Image 1 (cartoon, rainbow, N blue to C red):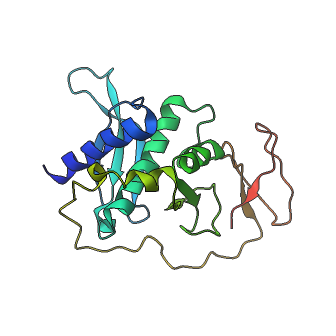
Image 2: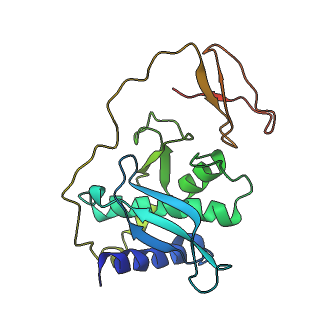
Length: 206
């Protein structure tokens, strides 16, 4: 099997063990990306002969295939949670925002959302990573040998940092985001803003 086929096999396994086989099939691709280990794109493919039939995409970044298989595949599950929310979620995120519904699903499956990839990170936001919860559902799946039987063969020789290293420019206006729907507004750092749609406090995007 090639690496795409291996990722498709793992998608089917995670669909069975984590999502009760409820997720629809989607196109899995391998794409280099400067800012993400993977991404989900809803309904981006269409059938060549019947354009009414579309498919979602999950892309995996080969720049980060130098990690362990458990870490690589946690990104696949991260994106599958976006697929789950697209199909079954009640409060879908705007654009690439990661809201509380998505974060709760991740945590339920044993992946802790984190803006930094570590314990001190925020659970919701625009650019989100995660870490594997020790003893959680995802971690325990790897006690089953079927999750270690297939190994990705290739990784990208080109290495691109996921962060630019540039400091955020100082500004008199700051971005606030609703942790539920992802709506953004800009105001002074000391402002107290409530989302008119969700009726909850909006968070300062640090």
